[in-house]
Image (cartoon, rainbow, N blue to C red; front, side):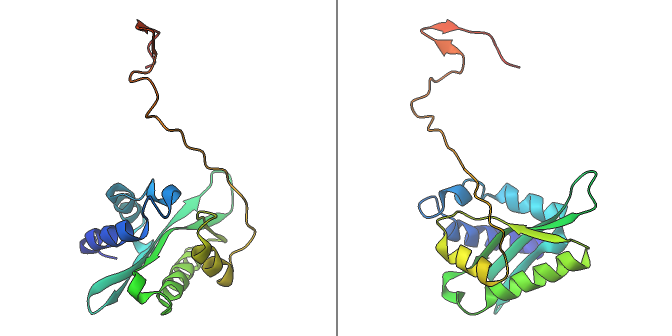
Length: 161
């Protein structure tokens, strides 16, 4: 991936990670997420092209835990344009990213997805991911929440700094 690829990757991700289809993934898909991944670990950000058009991407990062000998490779985002699905693009991106992680001495590769994302789960299981752990993701609708935190019945409570 090159700097010039960031806008088309972002646009493709906007089409793939919609609030209607994948609300937990949509929550963090933004231009800052992509820019930060690219800035922090450019080598593990990959794109697939067809006739110089971005048709897929894999965005990963290395993770070192303090006081641990283990290094982790984290597949943060994987996406392929709908027209190119089932053409092996995602598998090639995943294989290349996996090799980059191995070259950088990662011992474990991690990935997460919404448990309702059946296509992603099937693909990940088929490509060797396992040891699934369920994670509970909670949300809170703030439409009904008081406009100002700490205000009740017209009285102002203590401030939080």
